[in-house]
Structure formats: C-alpha cells, structure tokens
Length: 112
Length: 116
Image 1 (cartoon, rainbow over the protein chains, first blue to last red):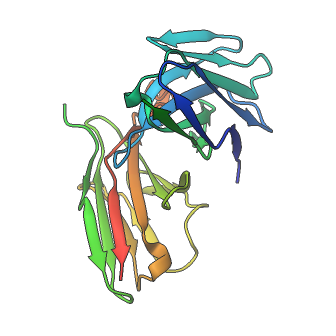
Image 2 (cartoon, one colour):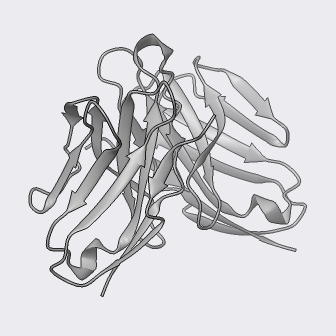
C-alpha cells in the first residue's frame, strides 16, 4: 500500500534545541497532517495543512505543506522535556475514498 | 463530548484464544479506522469501515482477523486463534462523514493485546 517516508526515524536532542523532521511521498496529497503520540497513549493531531505552500504554526510548532504536494516538514523550536514522543506525518485526499496514510514516525527524546 | 472509547485497555490471551476489541467512535462520527502498532514501530493501517460497510480491508491479515461496524453498537476487531505475533497495541480512530471530513482522525487510547 501507499507509504510515507519519514525522517529521521529517531533523534536525541538537548533541551532548548530546535528540531526538524520531514515526510515525503511518491504520490500527491491535498492534506498533510502531523500527529504526536505520547508514551502509552493514542496519537493526537498537532497541525493540519490544506494548501500547497502553506506554513502553519501552533505554539512552538511550525509545519509546512510542500509546493509539490509530496512533502511536508515539522519544526519544533526550543524543545522541552514534554516534547518527548513519536511524531507521525499523515497524508489525505478528500473526496471519494477517504483513507489517511501514516508515516512510520519520528521518535524524539529530549535530554534535560 | 466523549472522545473515541476503546475497551479493553489491556487484554491478555493465551495462544489459540480469541480476542475482541471494541471501539465506540466520537458522537457524530460514522467512519472508523483500525491501526496496529507493534512495539517501537509506527501505525499500520488495518481496516476502514463505515456503518455496516467495510470500505478498505487491505491491511487486514487474510486469516483470523475480522472487523465489523454494525448499525447499532461499537466497532469490533476480532482476532481468532491468537498467536504471539498478534501482541501489539490496536488503535481505533474515527472521523466525521462526507464533506465534514478533513482527514483529521481522532484516536482512542488503544487496546494493548498480550498473547502468552
């Protein structure tokens, strides 16, 4: 089935550092979404992007929808310990069959 | 509003037994998705259902696994004759129907199956 390539797969960073992760696809999506999964919990939506080139912020998080509609990135500024978790990108095409495709996730560890 | 409710949160089964996992979607949501997550791995799509219909089951193993979303009641993921490799977290997500759907899925807290 369709697969999104997400990188890096894991990262260790110092508290206070900025983080960047990205997601690429071989096919076009008209919606990109970023989710975070805290340990032992279900994923929660962080940011949704609906237009190519769109840049959206949510607090210390910023995400961009690539111009080609085949990629997206997520930046976290000034990381804090509670940023620990797994970050998933997801692609979606509205209309018709509405299946959401997830990347394999980026596991983030923050060292205090 | 109650979120997506999954139960049980934890389930232990011996090899060969059956596991039934339940999911009640958010109020007003008629689309349900099931994902499996193995330890230290990502979310793997299993099945997408609407009320009384299976839309896409391309991620479901051909044998032992089945899913339903009846007109009344929760969605059920059923695993027959469980094996150790079925041990995983199973997440249910829901979304609203039709044009209201924006790809935003609302996840439950998961059901963690352990097969002894």
